[in-house]
Image 1 (cartoon, rainbow, N blue to C red):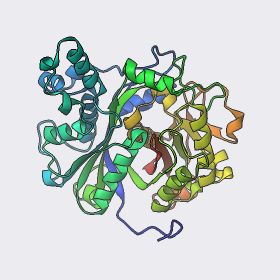
Image 2 (image 1 turned 90 degrees about the vertical axis):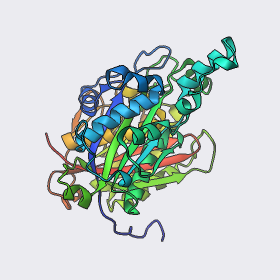
Image 3 (image 1 turned 180 degrees about the vertical axis):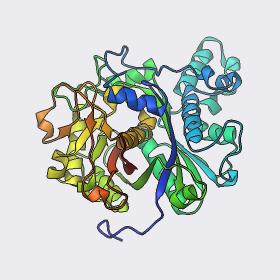
Image 4 (image 1 turned 90 degrees about the horizontal axis):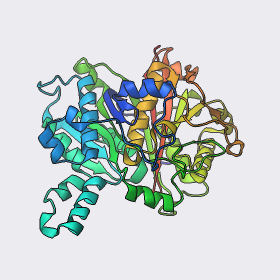
Length: 424
């Protein structure tokens, strides 16, 4: 089947829960409220990294906190919020058979804090003092493993490790598990906590980190990103499954597309073609025309090269006219770059924007770069969203459709098309 062919009919994948822990605070509603207000945790950060305001012992048993890395803490707290929204009561049985619940959590770097701490122990105290828990703490699949153990989910569990597109590709993998009939529910998303001086030094030496510690996506003075930490988790189900148990539907993941640049381990394809194709594939699976989009949340790292190439890819995939009139923002101006968590957190930002009919501005953006071409950048203040005429055709006048993009080292490209019933 060619890319231009019509997608195979499949049952809609709906979101019945989501949760987030980010530098703006704990909770998906806090994330939306502070982002819409223009708050930023990625301005003037020194040494160009930003920790979330988050104490894991306030949310998790102390024994569990001691035995796991911070990225797992973030994932478990975000998942707790998502599962509660989906109908899992404290101490109660899950609303699905445990054998039919899968866990797919993306992570780019794993437990870097645990690795660095034990490397220090090894160097100062000797091999015999290294914790036997180091490997299970630092392994990238630890969040997925502990999520399944904490809730007794016995379906497939795995980690998607595709750098900065990991979280979005985890959501895509969850969609495919549902489409294959391999699960009744999938807890999917991403988590990352790599805010160390060592990681920051590597990105700084690569020229990707903002020397001043301020992220300015799409700005003419942008000079790199700020490292953040966080987690975003969604509960995905089929529409019939959610209806059968009377669950509230928070939104729909209409389509997913992913490609590889096959070009360079860090630099994106200079044509932007593979990235554009990921967007086109997501729109095709969603049976959605570019003109139906009411909002786009861009990967928008704030580096000179990536912002330019992403805008070119979007222009190619959507058309210059559509892109020029499409409200567009990047969450990295407010959150920093969350690496493996970014795609999932930004999918939640997109869903919240659609649900509330309000797009958050790009924090830090003051002077849009004219070299990026015609863009409708949301800056300075939040923007009310309106459904395009086409977007009302399958779900009522209030349906808003949005796009979220993610790109990662190694040439990974991912895009999600989401929809929600707009409300004030």
